[in-house]
Image (cartoon, rainbow, N blue to C red):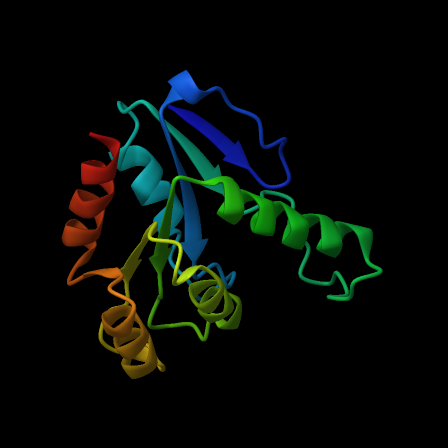
Amino acid sequence: MKVIKAPGRLCWADDEGVSIFLSGSIEMGKAENWQDRIIKELKDERVVILNPRRDDWDSSWVQKIDNPQFREQVMWELEGLRRANVIVMYFDPNTKSPISLLELGLFVNSKKLIVYCPEGFWRKGNVDIVCRKYKVTQCISMIDFICQIKEQVW
């Protein structure tokens, strides 16, 4: 397994395995660190994990295009999403996750999404309707989510 965290260089060889982008809730202090759980579950697999959860994130950064750190993060995520073979998306019920909702819209037609949106997420109805309309794989539990991800690796 190879893990590339933002803003690391998005570079890997085809023979390193399936590339998986961990899209979804990150809101510091609200969202569980589900990315670490997925990484642990896949530790023995031949995969490249693209993890946007940044170790040095500073919530005081101004979220504007002319802020170099913020722009670097957003561009890293967009490029990682585009290049990944699989995009896994988790909507934590304790968050609003507007960027994850944006990413769902951007990549709904990509045929590479796996979504887990549990009960309690404030826009679960919207996510469910979009996933059904566009035939996106949607999971019913975290265990199902992990199994669906592993199926993409095998």
